[in-house]
Amino acid sequence: MYSVKVQDTFCGAHFLRNYKGKCEKLHGHNWKVEVEVFSQQLNNEEMVMDFSLLKKILQGILLRYDHSVLNELEEFKVLNPTSENIASLILQKIEEKIKRYKNILKIKVSVWEQEDSCASIEKSIR
Image 1 (cartoon, rainbow, N blue to C red):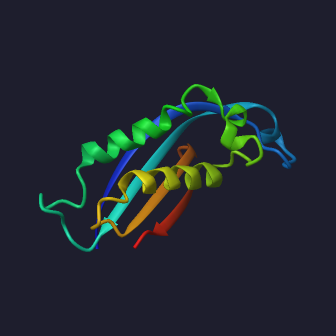
Image 2 (cartoon, rainbow, N blue to C red):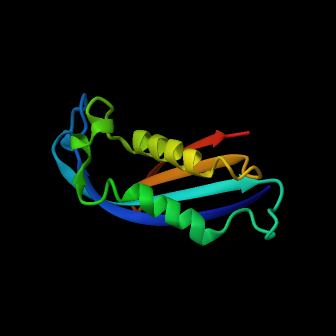
């Protein structure tokens, strides 16, 4: 299976609800987000997907989170802004944007809070 992967970053703060420890207090991260899309077949341009297009889609999604307190955003009023939940929401938004690309079979999103810690989610979309 072929894949292409892009990454981008955003700066954002959050605090964890229902958590006992220092992360229950407001703190920030320089988050890194990786998006990887998979295909068995290359498209007419002999690519899985154009890197620049996938990167542009990711950048558009991350604009909402950049320099924000995630807990104040509507999607995190109830949902805890964990790396897992952030990855899941980004995956849903990526899926909406690329569903017209019929060769894409699977999406993987990884969200890095720091250099050595990330959460990932994968979803088959066909």
